[in-house]
Length: 506
Image (tube, rainbow, N blue to C red; front, side, top):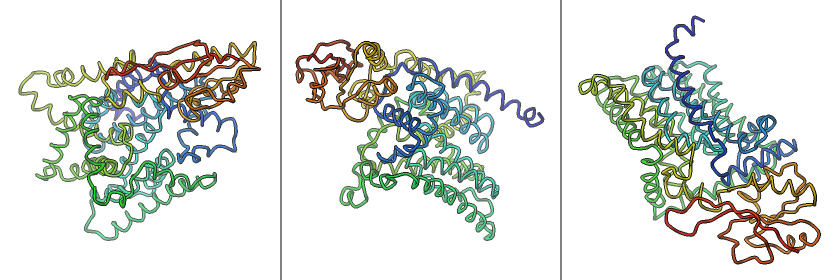
């Protein structure tokens, strides 16, 4: 009780922020269409739950399984698998919110922690991805807490902190292979080391780092218990350029990826929050230059470094580049943004009588309007062009799968149903599989046409085919359209796609 009373202000602020966080995450959680990777992860979790010998199934595609392991218990209590998967990301995002609060409070102040956490709760970048069943929200949670304990370790040199740090590093590795970057950045936290002139304490720090890294690597190597461990490294070549491939063109893909960021950040952060980040970086750089707050500036510099190093490496080497790949650094940027807001408030006091109210009026409207659209009509949200295409317009977006599954289950009560799908892996058939998990309906993958196997099934069974209208229209015959679910209208005025369900006639 003494602990709570002494920190009642912090707990009160956290309570308010928690309510705001869940208010912007939970409503209409399944309104947005299912995305390809969501369908894959949820389907893996269902298979892993049903068959214990397949608990390392994601390794077959070069993915680590912690997110799917964590989803398995939720599938037991939540009937809608998409809701279960997305709820896991909401919980992961909540731990990120706590990490942002405590990290900002440790480095700066409770006031900065309030502003940083508020920005995390309302920023469209985090609201959008915390509501999707993707591993990136969980990786962001581990990353912010790794940063917190790494800073705590260099200022305290305690074995218990090193052990917790090791488990967090291991959790990040088991969530997604880019979590390995945390191991690479960890030694840079020496910038916050207070006893640089004492060699024995530096040796102690190195030993504690070694203990943390050892724990993390032991956790990671547990994946060797499953088959296909080698796929983790083999699949990395599909996503990352090797340095040899970039000889003679060192700025490719760096420059194209920089243009991508120039499009993503103003839209997903919104300008008020992006300017807060810029002001935080400016004040931090000025403080480091003037040495006006030595210890604080170095600790904040570690946070900034934890953002910039992965960002630069991703821009320099990634083949494919999407906004969610940068999500793990966003909470740390918002810690810097909270610092920027805190430093601006005294300046506003000269202009207005209520600087906090003025700051809220400046910051809140744009992100909250964006969040409102995400919760009520996500296809109207001002997302970047490529993000909108992938999540709402193209084949990766799955519309109407739950309704189609319900229709097929009803038909299967009277006649044996077989359903063909356009695709073998991804949005289809996995997005349909998750709702037909125990329905005893045969699903047959196919290309953008109705295969001979599906045609033959139609001779003896009630047979359907699910696909994307743009891909299959005109290439199939002897079918009857049953259901059609239009996707979001493309902003470039190209042809609008739809998810379609055909009955295949014998």
